[in-house]
Length: 207
Image 1: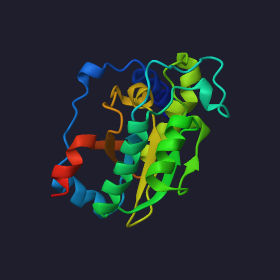
Image 2: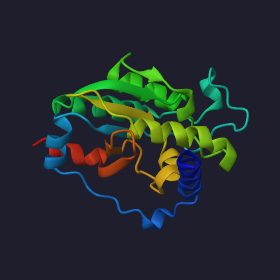
Image 3: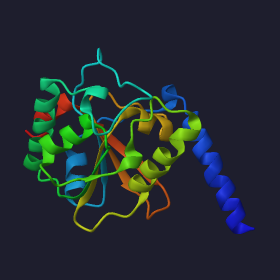
Image 4: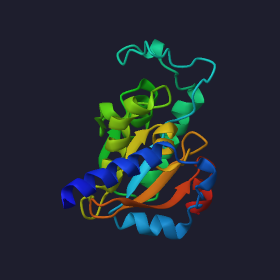
């Protein structure tokens, strides 16, 4: 009975997440104290990929993961932004041990620009904006799993993915591109949103 109730509860939570209202989510700006927290490890950083060319949308449903021409691309500024984000994290002395990327080119290229080859591709971090509610479920589950799972002591997990994925999970559409949202895993039983770091906040945070 207890297991059945838990399954029902998880299903209900997933349904509510997909219907979440973004107007109810309160974005918390990061501070220098936020960086101090992350330096100790145990957090998850969700990074939205670099700036993209919105005039060239994904060719859904014919997106080919092996053909970047079928996907919305990074701009040159988007690549430079990803490079800067990696540099900011290193300058801030944020330890990263576990880096995951969406399989779409804009996410992989952002991860590569920021962190070199230190990332794993996770197919279930796909962009969910073109999916039906049913199709989104694996993405929602994987995103929740990566935000909730314990992190290796003294380090942090980082995810490079898409805004709609967080929107589906908790009603938060992080913007602009390049925003990093910070979460604290709760021993595999969920997660707590801590704050968001906008791309143009970094210079002040690092002073």
